[in-house]
Length: 301
Image 1: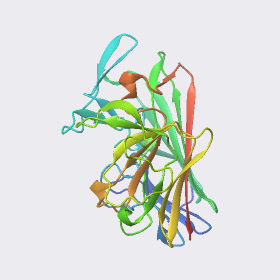
Image 2: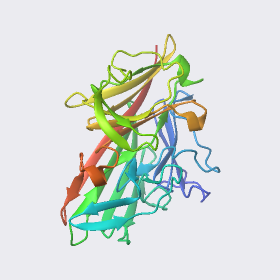
Image 3: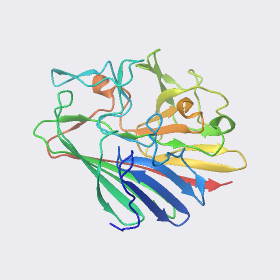
């Protein structure tokens, strides 16, 4: 670990600063969190000051489930489990169990850092995982890799995502957004999933890059292209930021909790409430591992 890349502990844990080409990033051990990414000094995500808590899960690593478990309960292999509800307005358990854990710094070399977490069994999730999150900068941008291994003796339900808020500066209302998805998951008043719908019929078609223009969205999209896809936020005539992944789902939240300064674009391995619906749920057998990757880049227009 290089001595100049790691700052002293702060409310977000240990902060590591990364550099490569025109890119710089800051990450923190609390929740293996992405604090900031810049290219040539320009923000690509809504930044979090190292000394302040993030708003609305900014930059957090989401394991062992992304999004929500409706009602904070789920059934797995004939057993019912209860996990803590942390969004009482909707009665849901949001974003897994690792967001506020202090991950250890496994290694850091100035352009990359690996955080590790031993997720021990608990009443609501009696399974044991070893998880790593790696942030790696290069001249092409930021690559994020999240891996989990079931180190317990029983099969474990699992899902994964990250929670970046991408930005082109200003607010997203002046930006065009492209999501190459054919379907959207409609939700009820408590944001619990109801049914899939064609994006055109649901008036949430972002395939051709419409302006966000005041739209309030907090939905998961699927029907994405096979292989690698891109979600792109563009300030016309100025700048573009792209998230690249090959996940089957992506959540788009219009960033109301961060003043619409950015859009939460969250590649996900499974659907919201997958612990109940089974839609995309991964079941890790003892000794089995799962890997998940996404990347972020920016360019001037």
